[in-house]
Image 1: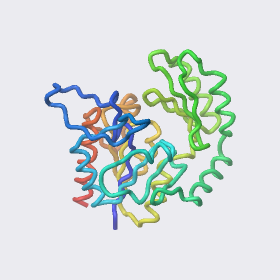
Image 2: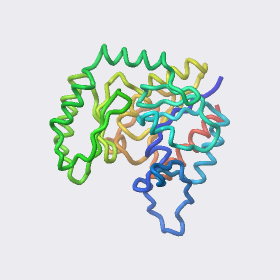
Image 3: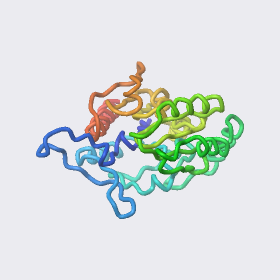
Length: 269
């Protein structure tokens, strides 16, 4: 039976220049591979060693990129190794099969959101009305499923974020602060539900996962084994569980370590 490896991407396996955390002397810094270009500029990286590990992992398990990114944002990433058959985008709102969104899965998700949560339009209106233009740089809606703001972190009102979380909780939504982005996401829109669907389709008897943010919590808890790096929203809150291993590495070297951990389990399974 195949093993499924469902891993978050940004700040878990791939890293922007600002998130690399290269604290070692320059001469000892790892060689990097660019895996995403946007508007003709390099945007995301992994170490060359991590790229080799991911290639090996793609041959040994069902690797499922699992991201809050929209389909368009995900498809501009060029990961090394075999092209994944499955990918989870928009925090579980889209299940891609050979790069194309599965319409039946998307219909199930949208029906569940309509039944259990306040509408996206209400949340978007609240964000537009209450967020301070002093620290907001962009308002965005992702695949008509959730909303997020791009902000200046040094100017951000942390109390506003806490108040937003309480407001959202009462309407069936959750709030996550990741880097320069504040996400408002419906609670039933989860990566774990999509991972379970991939496991059902593939007949997998082992699920592994990794992630760094609040939106990865359900994914980590749903997997048989999970890993989180030493940075990110989950590290900041000290999140852990019996099935989750906390890694000390931060930045791009954490991505390399996570892939080593995945491979070690898959090859020993």
